[in-house]
Amino acid sequence: MIAMGVIDLRKVADIYLKLGRIYERVMSIIDSFKPDELSIEAPFFGKNVQSMLKLGRAQGVVIAAAISRQIPIHEYAPMAIKQAITGKGSASKEQVAGIMKRMLNISDESMLPYLDATDALAAAYCHHINTMKRGVKSSIPAAALHSQKAPKSKSASWADFVTKNSDRIHKS
Image (tube, rainbow, N blue to C red; front, side, top):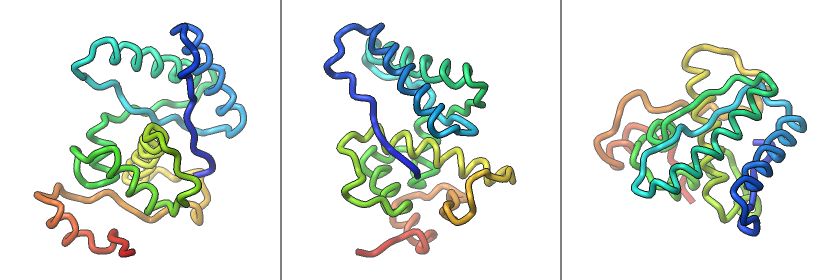
């Protein structure tokens, strides 16, 4: 991880201005960091239709920014991201954040109070895991990569997961 953040738009009232700010910020991030690929959480279906539409528009703006710079886009379902990170597709955002923090040795000072930042980091890490499974070489230096692999089979419970993955458990 080089950087982690969120785009805080709470003070922007106009939805179209929000979308424009998202596009501008993502373009700035792309131009600054020059990523090879974009990994994004696929839209999900929830009970609040208005929230889903707003999220879909924001995702579309991010995808448009990547397309404008000819960056390949990879979408992962929320459950697939959680499965890759925690071993359980129904894991909470807090569980995903905690595991990302431990796996990548993110200091308390670097952790943001917004779980959206660790969700995005988890989507990127999920893509890294899937890329490594396909045998695609990464442009990231080997020393910067964590050797973590996704579990090969589903665990019936957390106890089963812990038993099968004792190398992934960090004791405080």
